[in-house]
Image 1 (cartoon, rainbow, N blue to C red):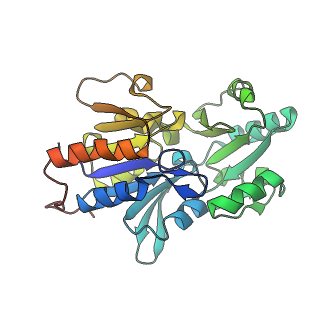
Image 2: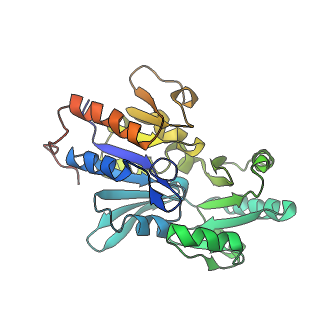
Length: 278
C-alpha cells in the first residue's frame, strides 16, 4: 500500500506539555522524506497549532479544535479550508449547563480562543501552548464557535458532563484527563481529516493515522494504517472490514518504528511520490 497522507494527534502522541516526545520530530521527517503529506490534528486552538509548527516546515496541514477547523499552509500563512461551527442552541445549552454545575468553559472559533474571564487555568494553559485567550461574552459569539471545552478540576466529573443533554448534531468527547469537548458530529467523525483529504483528493485507505485518545478514535478507525498509542488500543476502534491495518504502540518512538515498517514495505522510505499532491 502506498500511503499519501499522515494524520497525527499532538498532545500525548507527539508532545507532552511544552516538549516534543522522543522520536516525534524524526517521525515527521520520515514521513516527509517518503513523500507523505503531514497533517497535525489536535484539540488545541488554531493559534496554538500555528505557533507549534512555526519551526516544523514539513507539516502541510492542520486540524484544530478537535476537527472543527482545518487549515492549509501557504506562502502567505495558513488558509482556512473549512470551519464547522456548533449549532447555536448547543452552545447556549453548554454554557448554561456549565454555569449551573460550576464548570469553567472555553470556546474556540476558527481563529480565536475565547474565555469568559482570565483565570489561573487559562493563564497556565497559555504559558505552554503558544496562544493567548481573549476575554469575551461567549454567548455573543455562538455562531462562530466550533468547540466548547469543559475544564474539570476532578477527572471523575467527566461522566457528569457526558450526562448533559446531547444536542442534535453534536458529540461530547473526552480529550484529556481534565478536558471534555463539545464539537459537531462532523468534526468528531474524522477530527478534521476529512476536510484535509477532500482538499488533497486522497482516499482513507491511503492514510496513516496516529493517536492516543478517545477524540482520535474516528480518524484511527477510518485510516488505512492506524497506529494506536497507549492508552488507546486497536480494540477500541470501530469494527474493521479486514482491509485496514491496525497496530498498537507503547510510545511515540515505537509508533515511528511501526510506520517505518510500512514505508519500507511500500518502497517509499527515501523516495518522493511520483505524482506529488497539491
